[in-house]
Amino acid sequence: MNPITLFLTLACAAVGIALGVNGSPYWAGAFIIAAVIIALALKMANTWQKFVILRAGKLHGVKGPGLFLIIPIIDNVVAVIDERIQTTAFSAEAALTKDTVPVNVDAIIFWFVHNAQNAALNITNYREAIDRVAQTSLREMIGSSMLSALLSERTAADAFLRDEIGRKTTDWGISVKSVEIRDVAIPVALQDAMSRQAQAEREKQARVILASAEAEIAERFVDAATTYGSQTAALHLRAMNIIYETTKERGATILMPSSMVDSMNPTVALALMGQGDAVNIKANGPPPSQDQTAPVEVPPDAPGGLTH
Image (cartoon, rainbow, N blue to C red; front, side):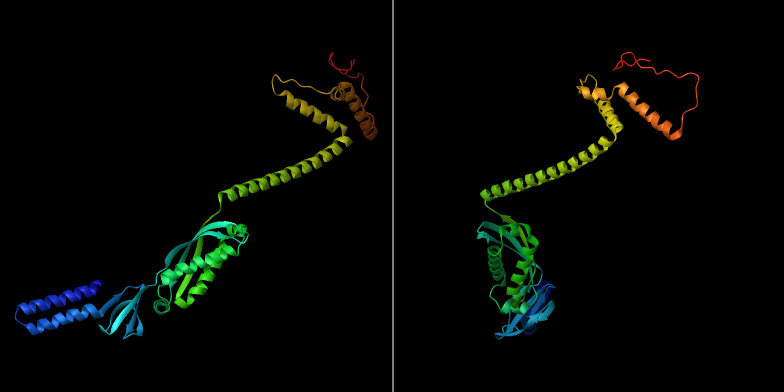
């Protein structure tokens, strides 16, 4: 009984009792009868509720929200329908996928009643029916899906279940808002196999990336070799830079091929310098005469025994 009906019933009953005590039995009886009628006839539905009423066994109407009256004994409230969004959890255990893999799937459905009359009159227990239809649709979806699609395409599976369950429950006055698959459990042995497969795929991808990097490095080496082959001085400078970089570490022992040492000896360097001067003289003419030519000083311990 709602608070308003309870208050009016108690008030009429109290007035009737008071009148009876004061010697007015007729008025007291009238108020007592009014209290009983109010208790039976005055109903109140909350804003999310609908009352389905039968009058003498036939549909009279759907009332609510707010206060309304019914005829006691003749009218009967057969259902109070909650139109708020409801949630129902359902699952499918050991269901076989299209590729014959047993899986356990847990899901949840969000639904609401959009037609209280159909929900009350077209089906005995719409809550239980929602659960049964959801389980059946889930098993049908699992049986028509591959395991890989079931694991990776959750959004598509949710949409399929929502449309399928909604199609079956529309005649009951029930709409499905959404379906969400919470978990897909597969056998432990299959989990290990899938883990190994994923590891192999990652290793394969790593090897492909490494091979691509090696190919790119080889192309760069070919370009560098072409440049060094046409520019001997650049090769010498690069060799000297490599030696400098390796000698920065104290106490390091460096082993160099003798051909590299010979290629960098001062005699060869001076010869290269002389070739460069000859080219400059040919292009720009001889330099102005000088009374004395400056000697070239070479350390006495220089390779090749160059003297001046």
